[in-house]
Length: 449
Image (cartoon, helix red, strand yellow):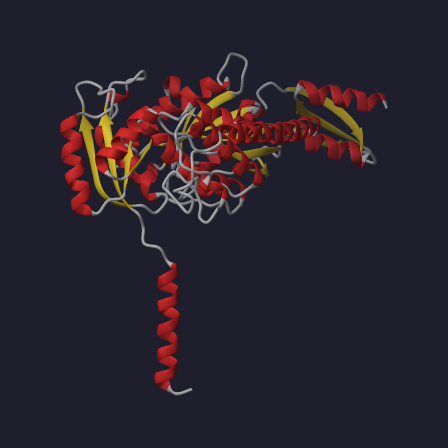
């Protein structure tokens, strides 16, 4: 083959590759500044818009128009006012936009009216989040949970087809797809599918319950990392566990939960879990669909709230996360201990950082707030020590004498308790060991045997 033939073949292959790559969908993001039940109008409008655009770009949409839409009152038919609709329609036509994202909750009627007005596909915040979840779910459990939420969302809307079942791309078909021209979804089929998914997820919940019971018998406490999406949970998880969970500067980079066993500085072991990130205005039915996964948070012995302390909307994000945790019952009296990892301190200005470090080391915030950088590792050792201290807070130190020949019992004590001191005298090891109530009872039964 001569040089021209090789070049021709290369060009053909490159052309074939380009033909298979579909161009990104051109999208517009409208962020209504609407009074809501939780004071959505008090959120920083620029931060709201930035987050909405980030959500759109998380599934590779080409955002050509993005703007905050301040409203004095709600318009029942379209949510946003007639003037905004007219102005936006012109921009949509000029920019060749085929998808409009309204960063709020739309009723089916509002969605339909806006589609007619814009002559483009319209989805709301819930639909966009579900589309992202559908594209990101990797495990069977994750796909089940996302599909349950998607079907529940679709059931109340005149969605054109079950495009997500064809799976020609990620997502759940709210952006259109191969079955866009099919007839309306058969509600009976949706109901049957929902019943089946709930049955499968109930099996997942039972399996998780069995696994949790096994960890409790082995005296392995659980630490759950929670936080707003893109707060750095997966980066911290990877640093603590040595795992390689996907960690990118991307909203909802992690969807499927991951668990790893780690060794704490005090020698004790624990299981650490990385969970899906929360977001403002997270739909209730979406939380319900992920309950099988989020039960790991409810049942955790310690919850570490990872916050992006460098984000301008950090305090409001904190409120959003705590709102979801309250919905789950994870912050009820008698529940897990709750501490905060103030992440991304490496991105703070020097003065702000120094103020934060001073506040976290004194006063009422001490022992609850831990400034860290999961990226650089700064402060992570102190966080690990704090985790170990909180997990052993209810343990009682006991003086125990064990024959040196009884290696199994010595190994058990090191595995299930915190050996604070040891002194070997002849054939006897004398130890001071901190054991919680469960481990102490197990040891007593071991002595009887």
